[in-house]
Length: 447
RNA sequence: GUGGCUAUAGCUCAGUUGGUUAGAGCGCUGGAUUGUGGUUCCAGAGGUCGCCGGUUCAAAUCCGGUUAGCCACCCCA
Image (cartoon, rainbow, N blue to C red; front, side, top):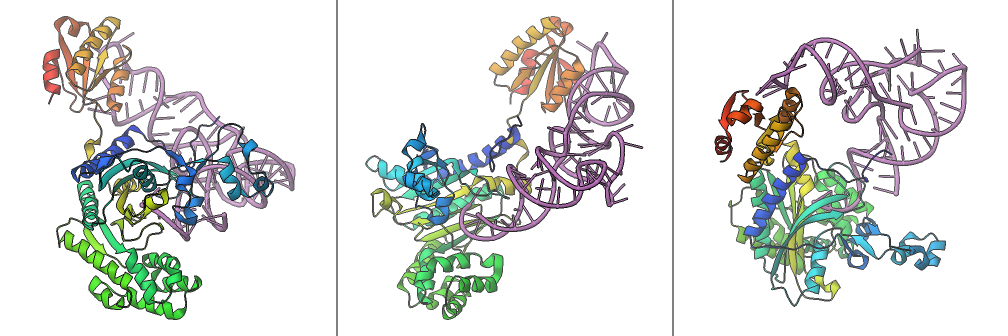
């Protein structure tokens, strides 16, 4: 059979894993410094935990896990006869793969509400799964790195999360734009335009502004049934380049003004010019996820054509659906895969992401092979990454291996070396070789 | 879910209006070199041309179907 892996999934080579770990380590280090604590949740959740949280589109993209055993015995016969997949699902699948880390986190908080201290600041770095059709920068299995805080509606956290974005990307050497908006501002626009019921249609259209231009947005809104009068009003409001300009345009919408005020507070906390990357208000930032209610975030890499590499926002009542109302949360996510792809494209990975092999022992015959293996043990005991070629074969072949492994040193052991105790210590880069006692070699390779 | 493109050696790809034995580079194995790699030179192994069917004297090449991958849309990290 031809080996293959499922669509939208990938294997990672040693080099790739090292680079990915570099990203994860950088992100984790910043999370920890801002006082966030790690949790992990299972890959599978009950399907009832996941469905309905990500909108209609999200439900379609959920991976469902088929029940074990004779699942057809308990299947909904009516739905089966009618070939009604949507109706059939609940009777043959009770579990699904997690779609993001925010909803499982909300579930976790509700289940453990009596043991966690609020505000609860947690981070979580785990894979999520979406049954999306794969394309550039989009996979069916990918890692998210989430930081969230629940149990406080202080806007200081919005500011903190923006700083975390700024700091992580500064450390990675990746230039980004951190965009901020507020769902209340968008609601205010809809209200001011008198199309409150078409709020979602409006935001979806606005979100595409930088892609299809104002004309395209107008067309899209018209297609989605928004009256021309409303479109004109919206168009006018979208001209606003700053919060100050926006404010008078939303004067008739208390919700909209509240949103502006929240953003002002966040930017107040942040101060001016204290960030490495641009942190900017963008009235056209919309975001699809239906549970956001306050500030929303999105991060875009500069100089690369790639979707957003991070996003997040405030959700006022995500724990409410699990029976714990009135608890507000806010969080952002780093899309590790896309960050990886962007950094690869811009060649931003440092040279030494790999934990390098320092030396390889080579031997000529069985006796020296055994002797070399005992020397190897001492090197390893001294904390030096080293190995031995598995058999005493031709030197040329052994050296080729050392070369491919990218090890900086080869240690050659023949009968002469074994007798004198002076091993052949060869620098693979310069080709120079000298006879050194094992202790000397350990000294050289340490530090 | 909708549309477009692609599928030939382990990898990246070439293959003319359909025409003898399907090629290149890289990689792999061996040798030049029985105590020394990278560079070079020589030789060798490796292919049901994604799969099924059709047209034809003749198909990698044309047609239909199918599967897989990529890209775009929707949506999203």
